[in-house]
Image 1 (cartoon, rainbow, N blue to C red):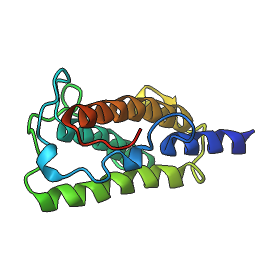
Image 2: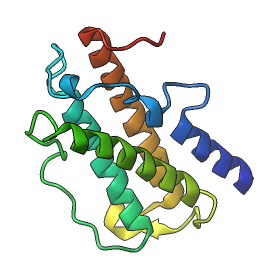
Image 3: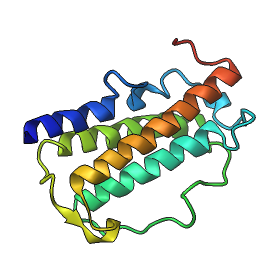
Amino acid sequence: MEDVLRSLLKRGIRATGSHIDTTTVLDGLEYRFTGIYASPIPNTIWQVAEHMHLWVRLKVDLFEGKEIVFPEGHGFGTVEAPPSVEFWEQFKLDFIAAQVRVEEMIWTMDLQKRYPVWNNLTFAEIVGIMHNHNSYHTAQIVAMRRILGVWSRS
C-alpha cells in the first residue's frame, strides 16, 4: 500500500491524468510576458510562479531538516517581473529543480513523519497539499497565458 501512495504522490507532481504538468507550465514563456497583468487575475505570471516556487522551496527545506521561516501574508511578492531575462531563465530551471527534488524525496522519506511547524501534518499530507496548491496556480498561469495569447497547448 505504501508503494501505491508513493506512486500517487509522484503522479501528483507530474499531474499525470489530471492537469498540466507543473514543471512545464512555464515552458516557452518569454520574459517580456512575465510582468503583465492578465485581467481579471490580480497577479502577474511572475508573481504566481514565484509564489509557487517559494512554497515548494519551503517544503524542500523542511524535509531536509532546515529551519524555515514562513513569509508574511501569503507569500505573494509585489515585484511585477523578474529583474532580467537571465534571472528569468535561471528561475525556470530552479522552479523545475525544486519540483523534481520533492519528487525524489517521495521515494525516500518516511510518509508518516510529522512536522510540528507545519500543523503537525505528515510528509504525505504536506505533499498532497502542495499538489493542490500547485494545481490551482498552474491553472492560473495557463489562464493568464491564454489571455495574453501565449499558450499554444489545448
